Length: 286
Length: 275
Ligand SMILES: Nc1ncnc2c1ncn2[C@@H]1O[C@H](COP(=O)(O)OP(=O)(O)OP(=O)(O)O)[C@@H](O)[C@H]1O
Ligand SMILES: [Mg+2]
Image (cartoon, rainbow over all chains, first blue to last red; front, side, top):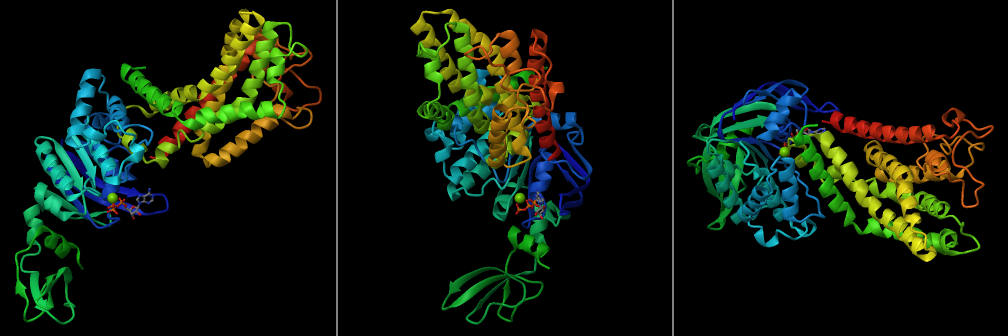
């Protein structure tokens, strides 16, 4: 499913312009969305999920106009959505909650619904806890229930807002692998602050800043933004004053710093190969 | 209504019923209310079983029981439903449900009927429990028939009216504040005499069902000297108090249900506007 966004603006009551004239095309496949806190990622995803109406601008998904009720319903029939700040009914079990969402998604066949719910509980490794009330679930377990509900009814458009927040490393890696396998001919829009998750799963990425698009291209292109700007420097003095310190590790009595800066931050600095995170920092650091 | 809408309604109804009926407070609140009422000397049991106080007539007795149970337990009923709609936002479940293709209006009606029915289960259990005990005690099986009829024309419309407002009003004020207003309204509307200050008592929109009690069930109090419908000399709002007849009784039921629908539609509009 192809998403086309033009001139999209959302001004919340109180005057915060969360999106400010955004133009963006999201093709089929995995697509990453990066941006600082408050950049407008969640707002964009809520508009795409049909939860929030834009102030102005136009959004179409596979040709369906999200500005109309019929268009939103058509998109929602194909949608799996994992909100950033998700909640569950504490008085239901994981299996019941998934069954309820599946019913609302129009999965009417009882046997098929049960089978799918069972499969997804297996996928998110909750089979053993499936019949416990959600009240007793940890944050990461709830997040996995959220992931499972997003995958119900085989969505052709999957919108996941910081899906790996709160997951342990093993689950996080399992989930991002699952996502890229799932993508195939579907569209998966992934927003995250864990740049590595995007590096490992997406070919294309967009970066938002204050409601505007500041980058759209391949992951490699974003990485290359930092080419010639990433430095490693070992010192027992103070950290380099220039640029953004990416990491600081104790090294032989001093510290080894990784720095993103336009020029070498000192005579001992030597250039190193950039990673996606460096590209993101080179783009956003001003 | 399309079959998809019907299924979304059915799914919400089923799950909202299930969640609400398992809530301990849904059972504890009415049970405590009845116990407290009996402890402070309420006449519930005497009206049923005390030969000096009870009526000879099975119909009068079970309709009188309905008036007591309905007046008493509707207070908790409204309070227990006040969190049902707003909790979807508070629990942050709303985005997941709103992102499904199920129509929000169908989900709202499903929630209304499901949670409303679940909260009514203990009330109906109390009512039919006492009515059955009375029927057995006095050997009057027709008491159960009158209990069913009273339930249909007095209790159910009243509860449907209360439930709609209990769901919708907390969208525009905090649920605890709604509860305070609701309890206040219930006491004011039902206890204060209409000629002392304006009240909805004895009007067509009285959720206690004065018109059906008077004109459909021919009930005028356990002693036969009371009425809950019709004009009161010197009271305001008398234009809402036509003389009780079967027609005005059915009209009163229709008005209560129509106002419930208006409250729900208003709640739906408030939620839709927030998108
Ligand atoms: N419901 C709301 N009412 C008012 N302002 C809001 C609302 N939701 C978001 N905002 C504002 O809109 C801007 C964008 O918020 P949004 O949640 O879209 O950012 P984000 O990129 O998802 O941030 P994060 O990385 O922290 O999740 C912020 O300035 C935020 O304060
Ligand atoms: Mg966000």
